[in-house]
Length: 249
Image 1: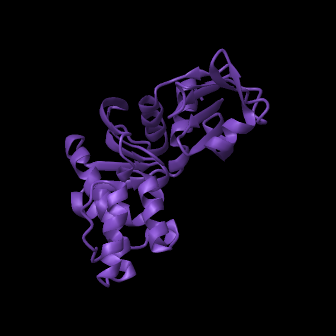
Image 2: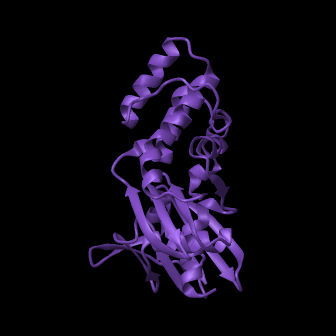
């Protein structure tokens, strides 16, 4: 079974056999589309055989599934794929899934292994991985270094990614230390998620998506919400894993 998650920044491919991942690959979305995409009847079509993935049933989901066609693939909703992947990876049945990707965020309430409710934010980059990338660039540090800081945060209130950069520069000029600035960035992301978490509350928060690798955000979530926080073993591939689960691996 092959699962493919057409993310806004990365395409994630997973092959699973008998419940075990046998192969995985992550590719830049634009590069993947340029290399393997062909226009057919006004739609971009991808032939996975050209990309070296063949010989198995394919289930697709993700940001680009409506605009991009995968030859021979069945398509499922992104929310469903991520919930299935999280239940499979966590071995839990009831929780709130917090999925923060490159350009959007999803908070999904899972009850008894099924989606009970969800909220998505795909209109503003300020609650996505793109925001962290931009702010890390302003601070001239890596995302890995940014994820170390969650104490004594500088105050960053702007709700817009662009104005957030301007405010960060202002804090730099004021003399705030790097650890304070980085912690302020991580806390700013938490504050944008907090209203969504209140609406989708659970005793357990499960993290997926690339931003799940940010340890500081996980620590902030645990401290500020008082909830147990669990990062999935394969957070970036969760949607693709969910596709395989849907296919009956």
